Image (cartoon, rainbow, N blue to C red):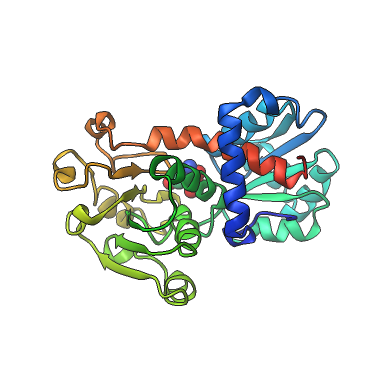
Length: 304
Ligand code: NCD
């Protein structure tokens, strides 16, 4: 595999292998601590990030490699008008692998066409976020010991939430997956995801705007933040931002072994009182991000 732009760039078999390696890294980190000695990873973040950038950097450091990069467009030559392609060509001369986040849909794909080193899409606008999905899959595999036979509720901003689009794409390849898509009418899953992924794969799904309606059926509840930075007008954002607030009361009818996930950052959509509930798994989920990214870096650099 050259680049990771879309989660479909990885087959389910390759994902199984990444999960297996990530689990081994968690058990035996010292075995991997020098695997990337003399390798350099560049993180080009044209958009803010905490978990994705730092877990990638922590992953590379944990493999004995080095990191360089920038964490905002303003501190790069993008602010002087340099194109993403040119920046990528230049940074490819300074590094072995590039991780890129960009506010424009498709920017990492465009960059990959000119790049001489592998490119990882760390989030492109409201489009895709394949490495968050790898994190989600490792989390689900660790918590549930399976990736099939699951009813998954996705709640919040399903329109602009790139993690949701990549997760639907990935999960639609496993057996007996059902989705409950919970959002306000304005923030429903885009038609292209419904047509090209859900309908094409005959995946069962329902849409609702009531978070409690199907609560009792869910194995996973994946909460998301309303994506403020993708809104065209602030009024709409203000009206929709607190549409869902998951609290203890709303979890009353949920299964005992429900897992509540969230790619984070959380704003108001999960009340902090839920954090003590054994079903709240989002902080654990964020920790898994480092290990699956370690496995991914090894794969993309062809290191055994
Ligand atoms: C997500 C993102 O950037 O899309 N964050 C992350 O990478 N964990 C979710 C979000 O910003 O809401």
